[in-house]
Image (cartoon, rainbow, N blue to C red; front, side, top):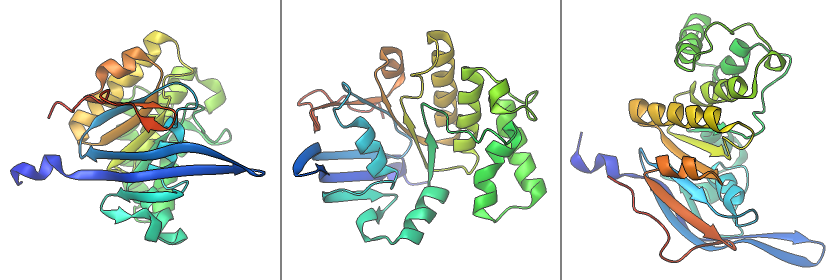
Length: 239
């Protein structure tokens, strides 16, 4: 592998502006943000509510589009992709962890984690089972495969969400306030688990947070304020 491979930009955001229109009022969410994320980064986006953290994650995750500027994900300019191509990018390159977990209540733990693999339609049932079992063991839920989400604690549900996000072996995992609904000990365990996955699988993690403990685990911290990167506050990655 070439020496420069670890420094490959997996996300590149250039002069991105995002505006929302409420009646006749224009509400700026991002005001000219530029950011480069390297492959294998464990990056924390921090800032007060309304600073643009979730908007930035949504643009990287291809669930929203920029008003102006360029968003490149895994070498692709998202502005030039059609709906099918955006869906493919979300399904094959990106994993999502939401603070509300977003698990399907009628499905078992196993089925929730398996679901993205079913959508990809490229694995046999045996291959899917092997990957799901492997991840559920890694997140400590191999004894809960047939439970429904309602039968689990908040920390357990978040672990299911992490397993589901990682099951497709995505290059990038986006986590929006992943510890917000958890107690501090469980939250720290979740971050440790994400860090372990980052180191083992070289998965790039980008997460928004208010949690100082979460920030302390990041190898790079981007601070947002009023839709802009706060001057001089971005910590360089320890690569």
